[in-house]
Image (cartoon, rainbow, N blue to C red; front, side, top):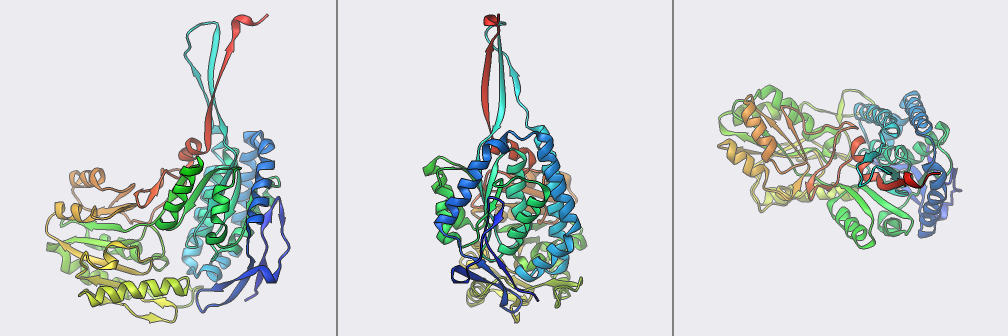
Amino acid sequence: MKRTNCGHWIDGIETSFDPQASFDVLNPLDDSLYARAARGTEDDIDAAVRAAHGAFADYADSPPGRRETWLIKSAELLERDAAEFEQVLVDEIGSPIQKAKYEVAAAIETLRAAAGIPRQVAGQSLPTGTAARLSISVRKPIGVIAGITPFNVPLIKAIKHSAMPLATGNTVVLLPSEEAPVIALRLAKLYAQAGFPNGAFNVVCGSGYDIGDPLVTHPHVRMVTFTGSTKVGNHIRGLCGKHGKRVTLEMGGKNALIVLADADVDAAVRAATFSSFMFQGQICMSASRIFVQRTIAQRFLQAFSRAASSLVMGDLRDPKTVIGPIINEKQRQRIDSHLQDAVDKGANVVIGGDWDGNCCRPTILTGVTDDMLIHHEETFGPVTCVSVVETSEDALAAANQTSFGLVASVFTADIDAALRFAQQLNVGMVHINGVTIQQEPHVPFGGVGDSGFGREGTNAAIEEMTEWKWITIDQSRRS
């Protein structure tokens, strides 16, 4: 495997790489060296933001058709180079190839959806107090938008946090996860090849701990879009509130999948297997809490255990492989600590709980109680907890017993029950008889509580990333 060095991408140029000011990017499969990336400083952040700010005036005035063309071209280039991007995802973050293909396809779809935004940014003609005056409102881009993205779906999120701002006439500075700088730099080069002008999109690699605050609080940054942990997201929300900046946050989840007594059990098992173990549970939408009514609980658990045990763990480039490595040693220790705490306090390990190298086997727990860490904290691994409930009301109450509120799924043949759950679950997204892991670029994607603030999506981007300007024309003074 060829190693690579990454600089920053500032004002249309990749900065020179200094080995003395860099950090290692490890392949999570075996912790071997995959790449070295420039370690960003506050000066790098300032240079990138100033480049974006300097480009903003001209970029904001670019015709909608031009921005549309650049985004369509970006989608075409990503489709052309899909195999290259897939290989980076396999090696940089440990994606099984099928997940990498899914991510690239979703990223292409997001670019094409964003290409429709520029012509949708519309104003209004407003009633006014006199016929001699014309009153209108228009939407204007707000300026530099900072995007902070995670390791788990780094391409999807880098594009969501860039294509939507670019489509609405804003410029961007991206701070990618330390685990995924290579994919971000490759995206910057793709945007440049598509025709985006210098300064419209910039990337600074490095530690969010070191340079996140300087980016968020920079005086030229008007908005922050963030995907990551609840702890960091709430910190960013506080900084944005203090400094008067707009913010959208997509944070953690402790998502419930509910299986009622009249559900199609086979369909529920398939959904639970995908929702719990796709990308080894390292997805904010993963189902980590499963509630099953008692009359079908034994049948469900037996079938679910068989399905989970059959998931292939092996060569990441083999299309049959489902379970890959956990991203880094810190996260592996977190999974172990959650499992050990649960077992010490009486939980039962139905399957899994052990490791093959850096890969944690799919794990199902029962007997989880509210004094266990795994009951209320996000584990972010291939671990889920199955609990038996007596009634649908018990299931609803148990699902809502969390500070998180991202997504939930409900399996039932009763449309009245389905609609009741959809209304009463305290989450931002509900899927009836479907998996918890779903995303489309045009929907209002996001959560409530500790799972998020604001929404992502095409319509949401127009609302969040532009501001109204009211204009009047006194026609009585025209000569």
